Length: 183
Image (cartoon, rainbow, N blue to C red; front, side, top):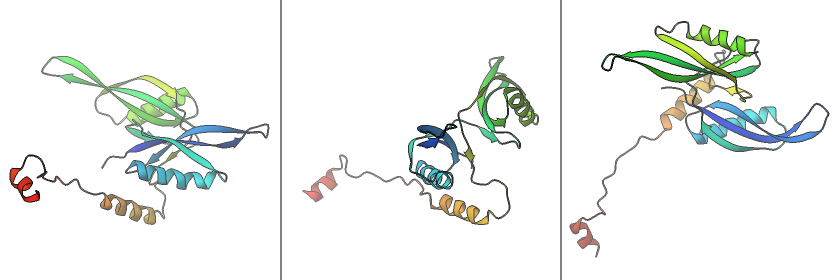
């Protein structure tokens, strides 16, 4: 199952450098199974950081193929990676784009980190764009640290509780026998 990242915008009162307070809205990324769970997780995560009242103003699915944190980096960069493939039927080269969220301190380091991440790729690729992302922080389900068994159990329970889509036959539409029974 692939990871679905949700971008959640959180509005709250923030104290600036001068000691004054201003209302700000900041985007965060959360790994979740649904919009509802994304809202629940961002509430839980932000409660640990913000002691005052906050409001979630928007939740949307983020279009990142992969998220790559790096140690000793404090900002997030959105890297556009173009994968090149040769179409044998038409004889043309096709490009498909994907976006990576890479942690770095500046654009050059983001380029180096993106190149490092893509180093195991067998096909050809290019990096046409890297820009700083407004994302303040990323909250994955699992950080890889020990002691996350409770979180893993909760994730598996949530995944198992997702209802399967069941197709129901609609007997109400244009069935003369059913209409005769009910009249």
